[in-house]
Image (tube, rainbow, N blue to C red; front, side):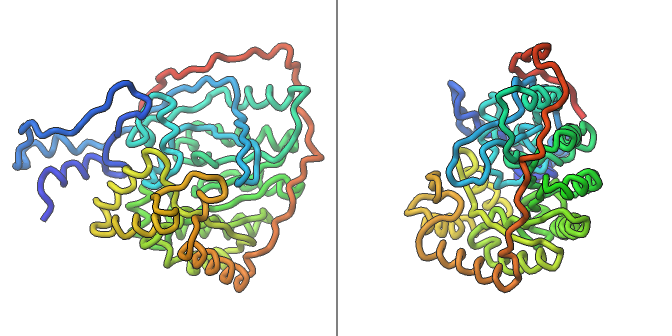
Length: 377
């Protein structure tokens, strides 16, 4: 039987992936847990501790919406993220540490305090109209999901897509949200000009595990339906098995690939569980709460694939790992893809059709960077 404290704390975080807010790693001070004796074993205070955490919106007035990178192990050099933070609440999310740059916690803050760019479309148009801009495929949804629940209301991703479609700018998308089907007609038209491709991320086919590990994301079956609908509309699709978690989801690799192939995916990829910065203790805490007794097994296998470390951030190693276990996973993936014909190449995205937006950039003014609290909902 669970004790009252554990029960109350779990109820407090209903629908969220993290159980608390670890300190920002850039803060000048850090907290330590201490038992000062205030807690009571009775349930008399439990009703006051079970309120559901609301999502808070914070305005992010950024100078740019296009982020550039020079990472040699990813296939794009620029990306767009309309949101910082993600309400999906996936316990394993590698983007959680980025919330520290906002002075917030990578824990519950990442899921409940979302920064968004209300002028994202205007800023994007200004960037695309710059005389020095050279068109290359943009990636959307790499850090946080562009179709997370708040997008239904704010429609920032929709505005970005409409701008890119008018400019005939190619884009590569990763999502785990069924909300992307809202934009099916627009994506289908872009696909006819070789301007878009979509990868749907699937971690597990286990409904119960997915509900606990990805509390506000679409179910796995819903994501397979998204793949099927996108494919039927002529949009080049891929499945991304990410993250692949040893001793928890790795045994599902072939089943996920089979289901995705049946849904119309043409190609596939996978990414081994990544645990940068605060993600490691947050995910270990989730394992200890939700998969009792499994945490050490998961971390032991990770150490075997990262030269004794639980995470190796080196380019070329962070996504796949090294050693015999990593090699076995890679061989399983290749064999399954070959058998299921998921080793096809998607049509190349076309950057030659690009037309800058019609605007006078001399009249555009830069907006100062900052965060302003907006609202609760």
